[in-house]
Image (cartoon, rainbow, N blue to C red; front, top):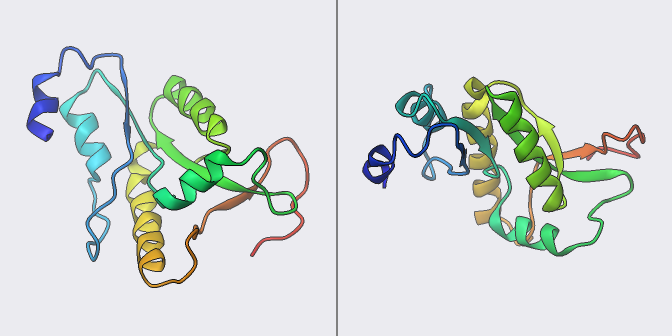
Length: 149
């Protein structure tokens, strides 16, 4: 698949590429991350690391809810990128999926999101709870959080 992407280099200029992949189970997050490697391979593209820190089962459940919250705590949609415009695009997408967008800084932080994704994968595999995620946040509209857990 990576080779196919390389063949699309010119077409990907000025496009937003969202890397939602996670390292294989048991792997360690590395630098450079796959997101950084993609950005290096396609210097004209805008790479965003997002949607990897939420297990698919939890994302599907959250996306079906009207207002997924516990008190004033919301499921967080973590993302990082070096491109401000792409951050606006991905934040809008995350809101459409009922997630509270949380900007985690530059693309060099993608390996940190990979670590969270690996932790969530491990917990999901070893838990009887079908919807596990470790990322929650208060809503950014100024409402205070009731509690963090």
